[in-house]
Structure formats: C-alpha cells, structure tokens
Amino acid sequence: MPIQTLRFSLKFWVIFWFFGVTTTSVSFGQEDWFLNAPMASAKPKPPQLDTVLSNALRISSQDSIRLLKQYFNLIINELEMEKQILSEDNAKVRTEIDRINLELKSAKLTSRERQTLKQDLERLQQTLVSNELAYQEAQAKTQGVSNRIGIIIDEKDSLNTAYNKTLIQVEEERRQKFIEMVALLLISALLLAISAISIISGRRIRKQKQHIEEKSVQIAQQARVLQVANSEIERQNRNIMASLSYAGRIQSALLPSTKKIQRHLPESFIFLKPREKVSGDFYWFEEIEGRLILVAADCTGHGVPGAIMSMVGMEQLNSIVKVKKMHNPAEILHCLNERIRYMLKQTKNKTRDGMDIALCVIEPNRQTIRFAGAKNPLLYVKSEDEVQQLIQIKGDRKSVGGWKNTASPFTTHTLRFETESPTFYLFSDGFQDQFGGEENRKFMRKRFQQLLFEIHHYPFAKQKEVLHETLKNWQGDNRQTDDILVIGFKL
Image (cartoon, rainbow, N blue to C red; front, side, top):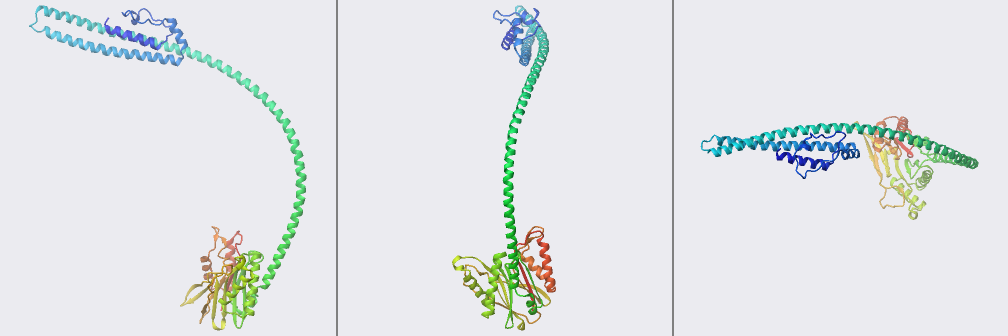
C-alpha cells in the first residue's frame, strides 16, 4: 500500500486518540481498514471497547455528539486532503507516463534504454493503479466509519432521551413532593400567623376602642368649646357687619345728594359700586359763587381703610372749598395734599396713604371747565364738523398724600365750549381693573374708553344702566376687584 495511506492512518489515530471519541456497543471488526492497514511499529494503539463505552457514559449527550461530529468532520477533511494528494500524485504519474511514451517513440534510444523506460512505465502504471485502489478503499472504509458514527449518535441520542425522561420523571416527583411539603409548611405558617394576628388584632382593637372613646370625649368637649367660640364669632361678625352697614350709611350720608347734583347738572349720572359695605372711592360736589366743583376720588385701599381715608378727604374738601373759598383746581389739590400729609404725619412715618383725584370746576354761565388731576384723567367726547372723537386730558403723575413730596405743582387745564357741550367722564381705575371675560383678564383702559365713547350719546340714565350690565356680564362669578366709580355729565 502507498506511503500516503500510511501517513493518513497515523494522522487518523492521533486525532482519534486526542479527542477521546466514544462509541456504543457497535464493535469494529477485523475488516476495518485502519486495523488491516500496514502500520509502523510506533502506531498508537486504539482504545479498548470497554474504555470507549466507559468514556461514552461519562460524557454528556451534547458533548459526545459534538465530539463525534468533530471527529466525522476531521475524517472528511482528511479524506479530501488525501484525495487531493492522490490526485496530484496521479497527475504527476500521468505526466511521467506521457513523457516516457514520447521517449519510447524516439528512434535514437538503445535497446537497454528502451528496456529501462518500459520498466519505469510499468512501475508508474502499477503505482497509478495502486493509488486509485487506495483512494477507493479509503473512501469505502470512511463511508463505513461514517455509517457507524451515525448509528452511534442515534443510539447515544436514544439512551440520552430515555435517561432524560427518567431524570425528568424523578425530578418531577421530587418537585411535586417538595411543593407538597412547602404547601404544608405554608399552610401551617399561615394558620399560625392568622392565630397570632387574631390575638394581636384583638388587643389592638381593644386599645383602639379605648383610645377612640377617649378621643370622642375630647372631641365632644372641643366641639362644645368650638360651638361657643363659633357663636361668639358669629355674634362678633354680626356686630362687625352691623357696624360696617352703619358706617356705610354714614358714608352715604356724607356723600353729596344726587338730587343736589341733578339740580345743578340735570344731564349727569353717578355709578358707584363699593367692593365692601363701605368704599374707598368717593365723589364730592359743591356749588359756590356760581361755580360747580365736582370731584371723583380713589383712596388708597378699599373697605374700612379706604372709607376712613375717603371721610378724611371729604372733610378736608369741605374745609378748603367752603371755608377758604378756594376754587382753582390746582390750588385745591395742592392744599389737600399738604393737609393730608400733615394729618397722617407722613413726613415722619413715611406712609403711602393718599388718593388719586380728578377735580373739575364748572362755570355753566361761561361754558368753561377747569380741570386738575392727581393721576386720574378727564375724558370727554367732542363733536367737530360732525366728527366725534374721544379726548383725554391726563392728570399730573403724582397722588394727593404720600411721604414723597414732589416740588412740582398740580396743573390746571381750562376748556371752553361755545357750542353744544361735550359729554364729560370722571372715574377711578376700578372698572378697567376688573377681572372677567372668557380669558379671566382685566377689562383694561382701552376697552373702557371705547365703551364710554359708544354710549356717550345715550341718555345718562341709560348710560348708567349699560355700565352696570356690562360690568355684571364681564365679572361673571369673579369677585369684584376694587371699588368702582364712574361720573358722567354734560353742561
């Protein structure tokens, strides 16, 4: 047999011994090619069948199958390598045969040379036949080994399947017993826990019941105390509301009579809507020496503080106009500012209490209006060439009162009208600062002035009604933000 077959057999046993490939009960007969092949004296001895079976039992199913497959792949690789080697040798042999045949055709050869070439040709042909037979024999034996490996794998799988089923069955029985034992322990623990909880809960319920009874007594005592306190609060609240109502009646009594104003200004209205029972907004009116003095004032704060400030303002206006006979708007505001600062000691305590005022001195016979304002403006709608426009005369940018005393005087603005009198408006900032509408925002000054412009040609009673309805619809469910005062008149 050729030397290539010997080399392949040596490699095969080295690989077989290295991987320790296991087999089952299938035995290798004396006809196996790797047992009958001529081997060198150093050929490794294959493992005994008992050793193979012992190893197969110790190796897991997946490992043994994986190694057998590796062994099978190595045999195939060796076969392909051997096939390639034999093919290369055969090609070389055929080339050499062709060369010898060409030389034999030459007439120059001697008998001895020709005889030598024929012997070489015969030897090469025998080698070629031996290689072909070796390749076919190796392929047949390898196929036999492959078939045996398939049988080994199948038997190994069958054994492992049966073994795994047995293991699964045993494991299932153990698991079932474990579950039963755990369930029994859990039930016992649960019963013990329920018993302990029942005992503890009983003690806790008795303590809680006792605690609740004690709390009930305390709550009953506190309820009686709260009832007494609530009755006292309600009584005091009724007294406060009665006092506020009385203060509101006093403030209303101190305000000028609307009949008096209507007598001198028949085309006029006064819309006053306090936020509380009493108001920090007030109006003041007086007729002196043929002059009508009309004031719309917005005091600091609202409610009781604003009402007290308004009473101070009305009292001082009575003194300044009626006693001192002052009728210049700027001088009246200046004198009022000094008196309030002095009365409230604002140079010392630096309080900001005061008022924003719009003051008009009306001279009906002369069709003249003089105006001075402390922050608050005068609005009027003027008709010129059948075109109506809303005009604003701004007040000075300072309030009456407050600890900051600016040196600049108040300004008097004089308006004369030879034809029909415009419609005039004095107001505080309460209407335009009211929150409401779909977006719950302020009414704003621009919208308020546009409203006055749209209703100025209405009768004054109708104007007051429109202002009231507009405010109601805008405000909705919102609380009134501030005191509201709007005065409209016409000469």
